[in-house]
Amino acid sequence: MPSLPSYALNTLVTALVHSQLDYCNVVFASLPACDIQRLQSVLNTAICLVAGSSRRDHVSSLLRDRHWLPVKQCLEYKLCMMDLITRSAAAAVRTGLGSATSSTVAVPRTKSLLGDRSFAAAGPRAWNKLPPLLCRVSSAATFKSQLKTFLFDHAFN
Image (cartoon, rainbow, N blue to C red; front, side, top):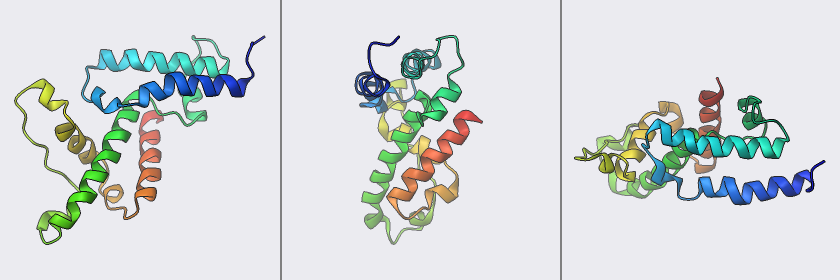
């Protein structure tokens, strides 16, 4: 018998674990797969705790049912949202340029692995993985919703 009501447990896990994984998670961009898997393990344990299931249960359905993206997709989501803000700020400057209508972004060359992990390189790389129709969405709210749907579809299918 759990000592906390399910709503309180869900709130605590979200506040303590999920929020910490989400806070500044852009710094995790381009981490090796083994490090991403360690973070995913923390999220998997949290979802099992909230759902009241065993650690041996498959967590994909638990994540999907609660609308939690896996860690890798959370990183892509944050990178694309930040890149949208960057692109929106630069749109006024690029209005007359031919690149203003392009859905791809130039990825700057870097000379180190650390440079590859910087937002300046990781953001455009994540953006360029998106389908062109998604990149042309005019509203930020619509983009946010469609981006999450796109990432869910690719994470669980």
